[in-house]
Image (cartoon, rainbow, N blue to C red; front, side, top):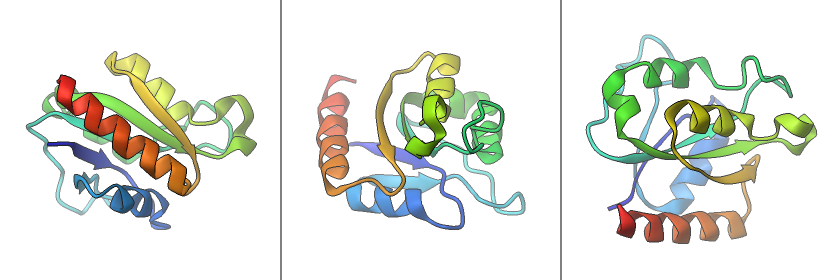
Length: 133
């Protein structure tokens, strides 16, 4: 069964995309005072890119904190990222950074809220990927 862990800012752009996928999911907490998320099964991480085009600050701090937990890090099997094409070469770079750090595939990139085609491609891709793991 496909399992998604995601981070979404207060705008809920990433949350809306994840909701359209229809898979079991958990959200990385937005605020430090919220309960820490621990994951004990394989998941794909969906993360927005921050930083306005800079590599520094591209991965949200909440995601860094989540991945600093060894168990959370070990269960990540892939990453999908969103971004803004206005970021140029830094478009979806948060996914590139996480993929390289964790040595997992950067499976897909989508802009902002994603399109209905993005939702279909990600849903179908994750279903096929999950059959292989």
